[in-house]
Amino acid sequence: MDRISGLPDEVLVKILSFAPTKVAVSTSILSKRWEFLWMWLTKLEFGGKLYSESEFKCFLDRNLSLHRAPVIESFCLKLSNSVLKPEDIRMWVVVVLSRYVRELEIYSSCYQDKQNILPSSLYTCKSLVILKLNGGILMDVPRMVCLPSLKTLVLKGVNYFKQGSLQRLLSNCPVLEDLVVNLCHHDNMGKFIVIVPSLQRLSLYIGYKRVLDEFVIDTPSLEYFKLVDRNYDSHPCLIENMPKLTEAYVDVRSTDLQSLIGSITSVKRLIISSKAMFGDGYIFNRLERLTLHVLEENPSNLRSQFLKDSPNLQELEYFSELDDVCFFY
View 1 (cartoon, helix red, strand yellow):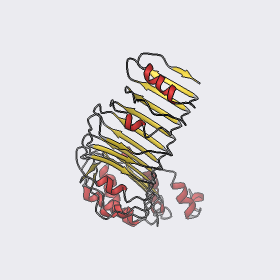
View 2 (cartoon, one colour):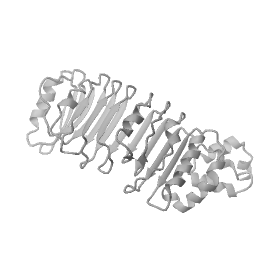
View 3 (cartoon, one colour):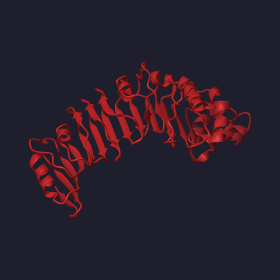
View 4 (cartoon, helix red, strand yellow):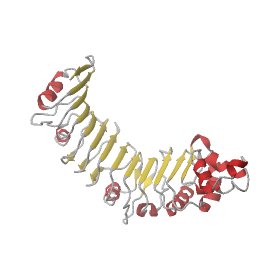
């Protein structure tokens, strides 16, 4: 240990960065040499199996404001259904935002409670590049929103304080590239609207109990699109053309495919799971690889239609509920 303690601070901090945050913090009891080294860590994770919440609440209340790193690369907080108060969590997030955090991830398993744990300063954080929110978190998006550096946004099972909150948020993320949204039955979003010129990857999951008034997608720079819609009722939708789309994954239970298919005809790689036909007049000129999961008793129609409408198809992987797997090259 004496030899290690003789190393420069920046080397010791680098070594500590490979250990879980709790382990890194525990080294502060080794000697005065180690007492404050963990405070220079740029990646912090609290919660999960390594901590009791009373333990990390006490620790964060006492020490987070003393953290010394000028920039926090990532801060992850994993919360379970516990005694933690929203105002405590909000205070920690405020501190982290003041340290120019680049990646913020909050996971809350309190799905039944609408926790307003996000401070208004989150929505004007200039340093934030990645934001991941998972669970019963209430998003009260203010009128003043500006996230000039945000490139990745993941929202799973969150609640929205007002209709249009997500749209307001997205419209003020000028460089957003990757968006993941899971819509569950307990959120209050009536319309799902994504109009983001810079977006390159979009993943949308709609739960089987989730019915939307409508959804609108206008993303001219999109290269990857994933749609999983477990609801058997069709949603009124407007999907604009995606001329740069290269890869798509479509898993839908609705019988209405036409507006969707018409927007993804530029794909090179397509995975589709459906029981619906999409009509004539769609040509997949760039499609090279197709994977079909067909959920109907007579799947040959859909297979034949894709073969007819895809003149440059090189590989077909085919699954049906009744037939064996077939491969065409």
